[in-house]
Image 1: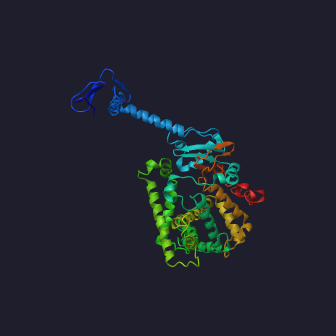
Image 2: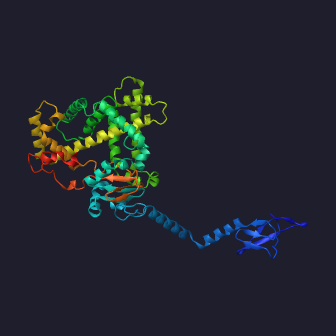
Length: 491
């Protein structure tokens, strides 16, 4: 690098720090006295510039590395990450109060993850009915107390209707189906599901007849145990799931059907795994947990098997599908797919059919079967109540008549026990999470749009009471008769 001057070639030697760097060809040359050095390079008396920046940066990096040890740099990086986390998670003005948090993991250490809903009780006492918690990537606001829950999900439902992006659900459902979708997709899928379920008997006598028929299969399965102790879990799941199968698949399965038993086993494992500590931690630090082995990986594997099971049923339906006649929910959905064929914006696709079907199974099976299992447990714990329920059933229905909704008003004690089981069992203490769609105000607090995890907790005091009005042996149950028949929290 250089420039000819006269008959020779200019050469230079540039000294930097304690060493020398050579620029140009072999040999060296020294600048004239009037030459000056600035931060951009070497400036000669003429109008050309010799850039020395790469060499300067290299020397600077060497000097920094010499001055700062690796441990110092690591400490600085950690301090920067802590400061960035503090700025990101700093509570906005007039934000719901909550316990102090640790960097990165938030309030995870405050909760018993096996009984998280019970851990919330002490926060209600300290911070009130609306308070905030932080779980790594999730900023949560918990709402308790009926007035505040109604304010959020009834009076301001548009502001709290969306589902948040929960890492596990996002990986499995990808915003498909009914439960985890939002916007137009959610509206279309929900409207279709409700309409179709009603068409196939939901809320009608035809569905009640299916339930009565399945109850006979359940009774027979119990009799086959010949009075020996057994776990009623899967027998109850068999019965309840068959009601859903009759609507979605158009048929029921025999209790000994291997394929059906595998489906129920997967559903049961998924429900248990999703509430496990490992999966809760996955939702907090998914970028780490996705590389680690553990029960959360089994959860994802089970979901894939469930999707394949439903996809196989759909494929069988396609083989003998009659577009003019819908036998069940899947047939009706296939009609809808055909109707919207060619519409790129339509949400009616086979993947949505798979996830909507799985949503129906979870919503219709797990809640009902779990309530029935709680009922059996409480009847065993309170034999005097079991006797009164049995006496009322014998008096109203006798030994030959099937239970029906028409007999509900004639069986106030049994109806009261069912309500009390639901209250004490409290199978869904926390609702499916919502997110704040728009900046809004609740209970005087400002809730910004960035909140991705809005939880509504049921009455957190229910766990401290016994079966009110029933365990005392009173014939008239205060939870059903009189003014309590239309208590607001039961509507």
